[in-house]
Length: 310
Image 1: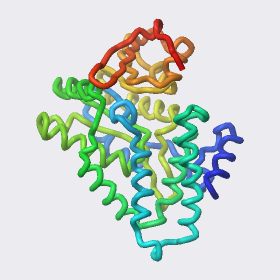
Image 2 (image 1 turned 45 degrees about the vertical axis):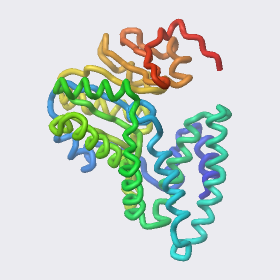
Image 3 (image 1 turned 180 degrees about the vertical axis):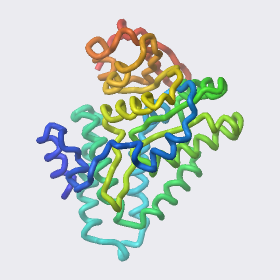
Image 4 (image 1 turned 135 degrees about the vertical axis):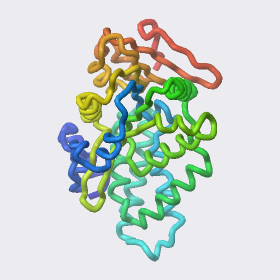
């Protein structure tokens, strides 16, 4: 199935059919029964935690987009005589549509989420087009050569503040495990070099996970399931206290509305709809902080006085 057909099915279902289900991939949310999650959950100390998203909140870009751009570059560098040319032709057709969606998303002609959905479809459909392990080595080498930590300064400052107080910083990201794991390793290496090796033990992370052979995906890009996953951790009494949260989109109000009264919730470079939907979606018992970072200035603004110009 081509990307165009998958998107049509996804939209006609009013988003009730996940786009990956058009590839006959099963979407699961029994996280703590899956070894990938269980082995991390079992290591989590009972203590105070700060929870953060990764893409656009900590990291300045979207990891899956970075990974997909490199996947396209990687394929162009391979010997085409050794791959399935029919599937490669499908990839090129899908890639043309993908670039069109990219332009429309940045010009606000389509919802940005439609663009994200296209990435997920393509990276899962074509991960067997070439040797996947070879691509992961290529991806890891690229990230390490470029030292792509590149966080927002406020977000990095918050992470340092948390771990230097011997509290725990927990990422819960929609990014796929193959790229999230590489970035988390890179971040921990940075902390080792810039701060202290022992602080690395205070950083944990969860992400979406796929088992390509079994055609199963554990989805954390769905905000409801991300919230349910965090609730599952709360029910295990891992958190003695949740000291703060960092996210960036209007969908994240879903998480905020499940927090304790007076919790600190930071929107980092909030999306258009996160600002627009504040009055409609925000739980006023939560302390929302809207942080923006531009060039050499970081500032917090009053959400009730801001004027949107676009």
